[in-house]
Length: 344
Image (cartoon, rainbow, N blue to C red; front, side):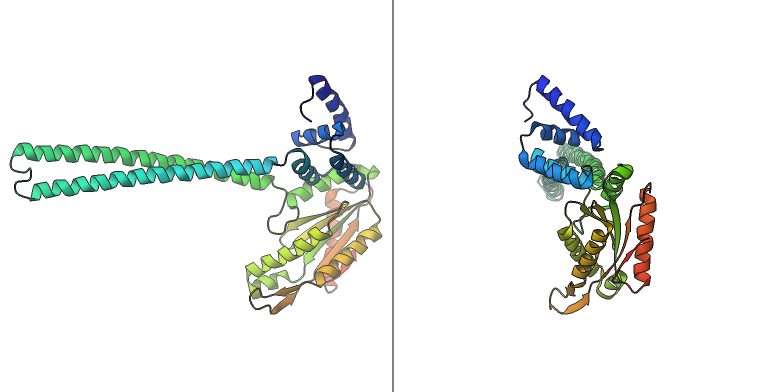
């Protein structure tokens, strides 16, 4: 696939770039590789998946592009590769500290033995303390031993300082990886960063792209789960809802954790009535969930959600669309919760 001649590679890029521009695809190395592969027609499954997604969204969302890249172009994607490098460096650092620590402990034991031996010589008659030369000899041995111990301790201190610096670098890299990640670890759905990027990408087509509908979903009385049962149970609730949302997601419907107990669903294509019915079905499905004690199986509580949904108006910005969906969500909660309300 990537063993083409220079002329072939240039021709494929000439084909790929106009397609990317036409569909509003950001010019990134990952997208270059993906669309380069697309124009080769060497992976029919990949091409079919891309065609389906572009048909539904009018573009190729970043999260979809990353998933296709990892699945079809690079099975060990950039995120996993970078994370693996961090883990390898961390393991090497731990092994290095362990080696230096064991060496320092061995030196400490040797120095301790030397101290015991010199102490016995100085206290016991006839053991090297009968004249000044013998005492000088003992002092020289102590001086040599303490100097060696000091040097070894200094090396270990330098090793620890270097390890401390490396840990700070690794922590910074892990933080960058976490910020670059598009998935919410707790719920398994896409995160707020993915939502902000992709909603802007969807709306970038203006009034000529597919219809856009936005639903905001909030778990009812979520604070009570934390207050009554603890934060671990609260996390379980988030995980259960996230699992249902993931199961419902399909081409044309993207799901994100917006923050806390609030989720967002973006619908590309289809009518507003279809999006509202989708939200109603989702509300009913989640309403059938039952939270149980993991040890006793006892029923703890049911789970319900409130949903506000809005269709994008002509010329409307992401902030305006989000504001109307939030208003509809507020109306759903004020009207008694466990319901879907539509924005005008």
